[in-house]
Length: 492
Image 1 (tube, rainbow, N blue to C red):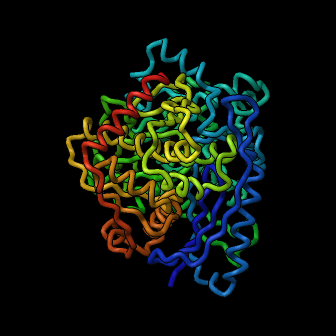
Image 2 (cartoon, rainbow, N blue to C red):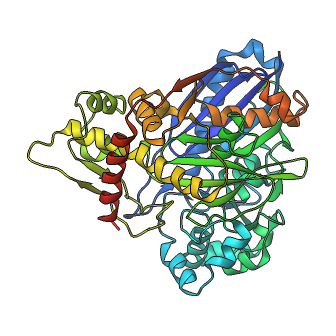
């Protein structure tokens, strides 16, 4: 059976997952990388560390599966989307740390552009809001603060791209500099109506057009690689897709009205809205879900900055827990949250509030509050934010939501999954294989490599689903959610 290797370069780690053409996971490897915080509100990654981790996880997979590598037909890539990197065109060497989507250093730039009344123009082209979550303001900051980088970009000695474009460049030895529509559309530089880089936006954010990658469909070929000699033969790179769209693809959300949530460092909720571009009136951004045979599929997206990152904060910053799994144990050891709400606005609040100035808070504590209540409040906050986004989407899209599909590492947390189903008042269908983003990119690769010939072929592939049905009394769910809304108001 043909095999495909999917590289998943996420915010916290780099993974390699070996799939067969039916979606069975044959092997996996993972390596975390450092989170670099040079100043409050700033987040960076060492791209060379990420590159070495790519090679390390690929080497692990290859070493354990040497006899099967003759059946390997391709490599796919999925990635953290808005994180941006400037690198040398000839060598691929980074000229600065990657600036991560969580980083807020571009906020003064965004604020100035909003004050100039440019938000609607930008939104009409990109489907996005002027927000430092997206890539462009970070590039503008980098150009402004580093004249040498600015000069190299202008002269084409340097190029700039999302992590997928850099990996393609490195994996092909500099022969291919290309990205896909899903990643390009997250930069604030790409017109998702015309499906091309926009000259006006590039000028607005001081980005030379010649420094940007060629944009291809996710299922297009992106050159060939032997993973720096790790593979016994060169194979095509095919199936390149931003992580959230890749998980939508893996969940087979091919029809309008299908919605999924990817639980990770943050959470992305994506709703398929069909082949016509529309703008949300209540705070969702419009996104390219994918482009297949020249036909775009659009989605509404609600972005939640802090999901699993909130649990990591309990562990790494407060020391309240020793491992992420301990949060579930503590949350279920008390009957309720004790009136405590944690609003994780550590880098502001995204949809539906879009308040970058909001600050995190723990509200409702008394002398009887214990760490168990805080852990439960942290877990519950993930579900409250998902309901925020679903309420926004229900109001914006004249489509009845039937189910909510879910994937990502935190879906192993059964308390969180059941509480999300209760708050969303929807059946929650969880992919049993947590590597949905990796599998979505691989599915796109199967299309491009001719193993599957249509979305219907992909939809027919086997999968395992675990379901959570709402059990909470709707009146109780409403009381809890009203408490959340009151807590959020106090942080704005």
